[in-house]
Length: 113
Length: 112
Image (cartoon, rainbow over all chains, first blue to last red; front, top):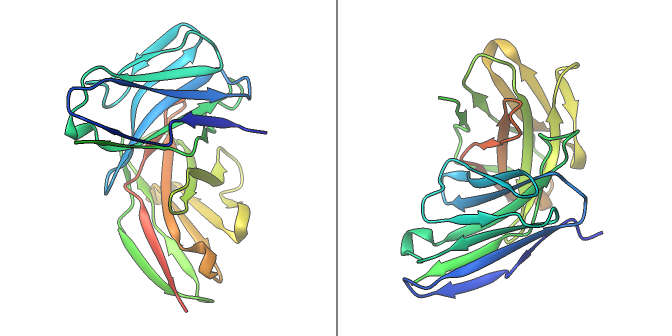
C-alpha cells in the first residue's frame, strides 16, 4: 500500500540546471497537486491537475512546469533552477468523491546552490 | 483574499499537560477544515477533518477539534500530550474547489 511516492527524496542542483520531480500514486485518484514548503510559510500550491492531460496554475507557479500524461503520475519540472527554489516539495493526491481530503508523499528536499 | 492563520509559531508544553492549537480562517462561506501533523523529515498525516454536522470532531492519536462558525476558528486540542506529539501542525482549509490553503504551521515541543 504505497500511497503517494515521490522521487528523488533529496537533490542538490547548481543554479541554471534542470530537473524533474516525479510523483506517483496508486490510489486511482483523479486530482494531484504539487506544493512547496518553506519555513514560516506553510505549504503553497505550485500547480495542480484535475485529470489526465490537464494542469492548472496554483499560488506560486513561476519557474515550474508540470505534466500529467498518465493518471497515476504528476511530474514537476524546473527548467533553470534558482536558489529561491530551494525548498521541500510535496506531492499530494485526492479522489473526485473526496476531493478535499488529500494524501501526501514524503517530500523531496531540493537545494539549489 | 482567502487565508488561514495559525497565530502561534511555537508552543512548548510539558508531557501530560493539555494542548490547544489555534486556527482561524477568512472568507464568508463555511469551508472544509483539516488538521495535519508533520513529524521531522516526514510527510503530512491527516489528524482530522470537518466537512459538516457535529462541530466537535475526533481524530487520530487522541486529538479533537472544534469548529466555531461565529469565530471562524477550528482549534485543535489534546487533553494529555505525549513526547511523540512533538511535531509541526498545520491547519488547512478548502472552499470546495479541491485546493487546500495552509496556515504557516505551529511547532510543538514537548518537555519531560
